Length: 123
Image (cartoon, rainbow, N blue to C red; front, side, top):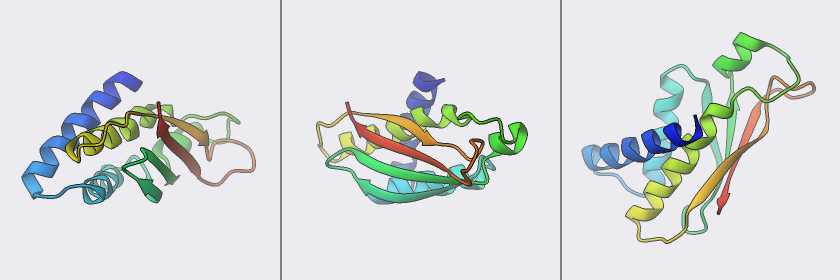
C-alpha cells in the first residue's frame, strides 16, 4: 500500500494546491484536515520542515485501532505512503530537491500507547 498511497497523496496535493491556490505548509495542513474529515482518524502535524523533508504527525482515534483494538502491533501502516507522497509533492512544488520516506513509530494499538506517531525523514 505504500507506493499506492504515496502516488495518490502526491497527485491529490498537487490538484488541491492548484484548486485552492495554496502552497507549502498550507497544503500539508489541508491534507491532514481532509484525511481527518474522511474518518480515518484525527491527524495532527506536530512538526513540519519542508526544506529538510521532515515531519512528525500524531494520529488520534484511528479507524484501524478501533477495528483491531489493542493487538500490540502497529496497524496504521497504510498511512505512511500518504505522508511521504504529500511531503515530496509539496517540496517539489517549492523547488526543494529532498525526497522522503515515512514510518510509523508508535501505534495506539500497542500496549501503553494512546496515540499513533509517524515520522517523515529524507531518503
